[in-house]
Length: 201
Image (cartoon, rainbow, N blue to C red; front, side, top):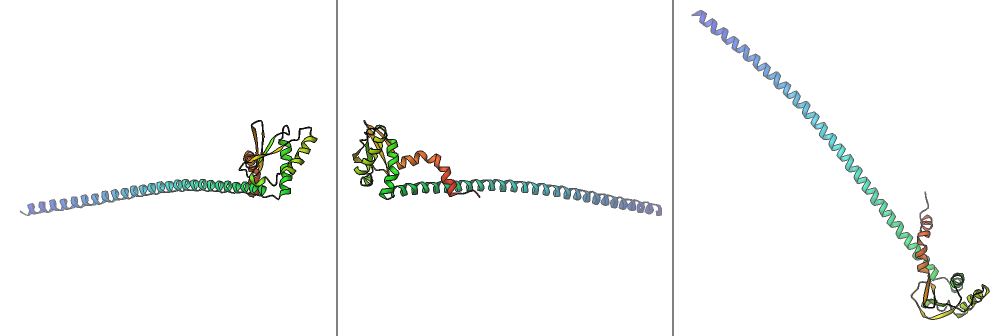
């Protein structure tokens, strides 16, 4: 009977020992799985943060590029508006010149524009007094000195010009109005005007 109890005791001890070994192995495996899971989670966290940083940097770069482009466009629009105003002001100043200065400005244009010296000169209503018969008589003298007929006449009709004149001969009209001259010269003059308005540096 004592032998049976001893055998049972040894079996229990063996079972308890094996159970402890299984528990220890399970703890070791659980710890290993936990360490691996933490390492994987850390790697994933770092990858997610790296992606987020890259995406944030790219978004920032795109937003800055867009903001710079919009700023350049606004600056160009502002420059265009100022150049427009400069041309409008030039036109206004030309129109408002005192009679003597206005005539001195128009006279060489008219002499150069007259092909035969027999054309009709069409002006704006506000220029009929400044570009009158006495003015045309002086221009005709200069045309005669160049060997032209020298019989320019002031047309009865007027046109809504800002300034300058239209020459008419045989139903053909040549426009020398200030607005047209400025419009045709704009491409050529725009860079010079911009250089004055926006000096480099």
